[in-house]
Length: 588
Image 1 (cartoon, rainbow, N blue to C red):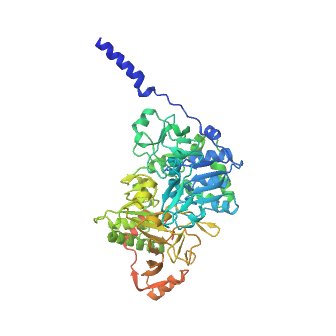
Image 2 (image 1 turned 135 degrees about the vertical axis):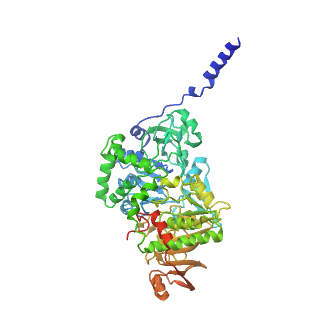
Image 3 (image 1 turned 45 degrees about the vertical axis):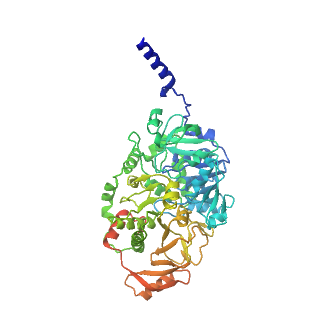
């Protein structure tokens, strides 16, 4: 009798509580069908950006709507890479973004953006890398606004009055909630109903997807069983109830990559740098971009054909490049190209001087974190960080999309490369890095940022000069508004060093130092003054005259100038192995 009762109980438990008995709707469909079913003209479409981008879906939007003038508003943290095809093809009337241009190998204006603006094809609504997800966060949470310090006093606040209301204190503002109609997101894995694993760093996280009014088109590398989703539930960021379609698209982030957060069952692959450089070159003229789109976007019918065009060898190489230790072999292959004996270039002088100042300020102020922008500023921050290693200082390198405590690896100067992910002590997202560890309560961060233009009050412009669009704010404004102290690196000439910038991207109130290819400037009162020049064999008088000739205002000069010694052998060696291809150091 006892055995019979036990058997009945087991049968009852299995029929009632067995996890495998749950029947969730199967939302799998081809990507072509999902776009056809869910996307319509006039929508606001959010392209969700973690460390991964929905590359395949961007192509499909182009394929289905080319020549149909859908008039979309595209919300994307960056109008870069293949997002530029949407601009070139005239598929959007507006881009809401933090950065529009080329991101790799160096930040720069992109001709597709400039041509589109000149022709009135679209407009750009500029935000910062922190305000961008916070608007979506408010939308997802159903609250009317989010309080921020960013963009107060900038020209972005003036341009975005419909969405931003400054507070009377002149320090804070109300950032109004924003909700897109439809979101597109790429995950490393999802089950058939749409529960999706996103791997860190999380970038903007899934706020845009959570805020979407009509659901999510979810593309993924692989559809996996529900038991795998439960095994990695701590990495699930998208629940099935928000998902309208699940589309299995291997390598669907290309030309971007996917990290696997150590999940051995799932593959990872790195960004396709060669592809990005090919695309950048194609953007130069309308005719070249037409040919590029025909070849890469419209010449195939199935995604498998696109992957065949890329070739198996290329795809396997991208998998290999995502390995944490792949920098060893890459550095060996590049070693013979590095001329360690060549005299330092002007940019190397600047990086050396800035790196020393970073180390000096860390030691003097006991900064907790160092946050740098892309380019020479991040090489300076890396150099300064390595100078402090071995000392009892706890400053950690952080990067805006979610890196905390990383130690940059050689061979690739791009901050967000996959080898640096493996060197992090913590992986998180923008709200934590920018909102807490950089600018939060008790945070003590040294910000190191670049500039398109700088004026005598240390205001910075990285968005536009007249009708010429530069690139956008990125995280520059957020850093300038909230870091404990800010250092700027910039190439110096009269075009870049002006009496008053034409567009204030980042107010200069917190800027302490500006370090250029010619010398060092420090804030004295409200204005920058020259405090140091480089020891290049010129008399001080001649060096000062050169600095004044390349400055667009009546430059103040300190009574006693620091004579800055040349980059040391160790400094040169370090920056050159960080950037062996001289992407940021500049060609000789």
